[in-house]
Amino acid sequence: MIDKILMRSKFRGTLLGALIGDCCGAPFEGQIMDSGTKLVLKNNLDRLEGPFFKAPYKKYTDDTAMTKCVANTILDSKGFSQTLLAKNFVVEYFKDPRRGYGAAVVDVFAKLRNTKIADPTGPAAAQFGGTGSYGNGAAMRISPVALFCANRNKQELVQLVRDSSLVTHSNVLGVNGAILQALAIHQCLQLNPKDMFDRKQYISQLKADIAALESANDPDLDANSNAYMNQLHAMEQLLEDKVESNDENVLNTLGHSVEALYSVPTAIFCFLKCLSGTINDSPQLSFRSTLEYAISLGGDTDTIASMASSICGAYFGDAIISKNLIKHCEDADNMIILADRLFDL
Ligand code: AR6
Ligand code: MG
Image (cartoon, rainbow, N blue to C red; front, top):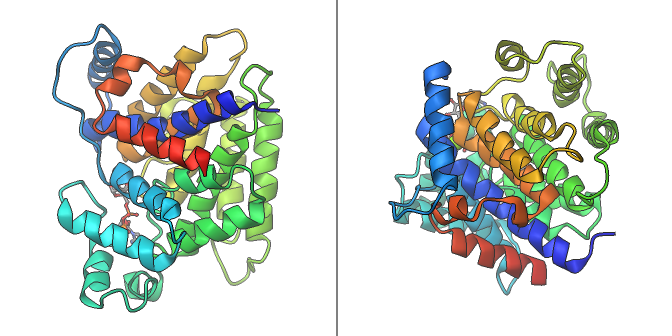
């Protein structure tokens, strides 16, 4: 059983993890992560966690901007609707467009605005010749849905994730990536970090949930019919050292791109890899190492670090996150308020 104090801390940890991963990962997006850059990253994080200094905020990107939109839509007095979510995305984007949005998703915002949101999922469904986006943009913003569904059953969670994803991402890989990320957080919320973490059980549960999602696919008609199951299997092989988990193997199998299929399992892997032996190690180190390791893999660093750190925050709660690091991230106070409001809901 998770008591109320711990659960509130887990809600804060989830949203702060998402924010911190985004803010700290953004400067490294697309960089070659050689040993020199990794050292810069380490020194950078050490400095942010060290004695507080007045400094410009680390700015957040579209990951956090859209996470806030999802949270505010759930918290709206009229409750969640796709039309309200679309409106919140549009208002946020046109107010502050320079947040590093995906190259194609901005067309969805323009069409939603031009049509006065006549059909909140229509523009997303028309993306990429009608195949829809398989980017990780639905997964990167999903943490408030996982929090809202903390005490709800999985069918409700899957439905709400799907509804919220379809406003921008209609490709099944984009949607299922968001579902997997939400399930990874949802499961962590139910676990007590004082107990021994059962990694095998955690992965088995994710696999069972994904099997239920992918079972309807026909492998003869769909090359991606078992796409996420295959990635979870590859992730497990790396964690069990059946395949050496050096960066090259991790990137070749799990990936670090803007595609949901090649970034959501990577984020879960980062959390699980850095958790090993947690009962003996310090939890503080687990959060920091998850953050640093996720960024060190390069590619879509802000989004992968945001997703990985959010899962880690959901498991441990916010007490293990460096207070000084939190203070350096833009709008952290507001993220805590949103987490508390979702908790009170
Ligand atoms: N066919 C071909 N390419 C595709 C397809 C498809 N069906 N779907 C996606 N892509 P987008 P996001 C490629 O624009 O998912 C930001 O940094 C295509 O190149 O929907 O919201 C965020 O922080 C497209 O531009 O954006 C995220 O980290 C790209 O995938 C990341 O970008 C992204 O899809 C993705 O954000
Ligand atoms: Mg990103």
